Length: 210
Image (cartoon, rainbow, N blue to C red; front, side, top):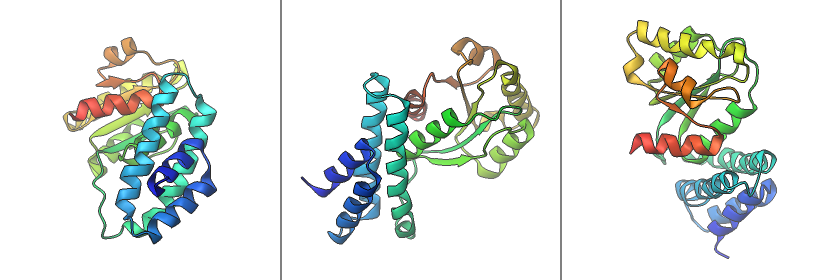
């Protein structure tokens, strides 16, 4: 088996040690960090996303594969200096004010990183003003907001209002998600996109970029 396939298989299986070992092997064979990321790790997460969408695997397996990918990325990041991997897009993520849930958000962040995007994760309990500040400072193509409580969903609408007031709403595509969030709600508050799960987010983002 070619070494890039080995990395891919180990990542899909969620075997962190094997993933890192195979990456070491690829590096000694002279394969660049950029190629390892693009042709092994990103491809692996794309397979994982498909399996998740088809109910062949569930959140725990997805998290394990994502963890293996993250270990691989951490190993390769120091080698990336001067070897630029062009990121697909920059995304600012956060769970809205009053909400401390982050599993869904973290999963979305990992899937986006796995698809080659640069993710700036603000964390949980993020006020509308903080989202707006990040949009100004980071100039992302996308802003992703997550809510797991019906009581915190209005914070998404408030955030979009703040972006409007600051005159930066047109600079960024707003994506919303979380268990109680629906397409109808996304439309009502004027969001650009809604996804039901982490794997779907990546498809939505890619469609918006094309």
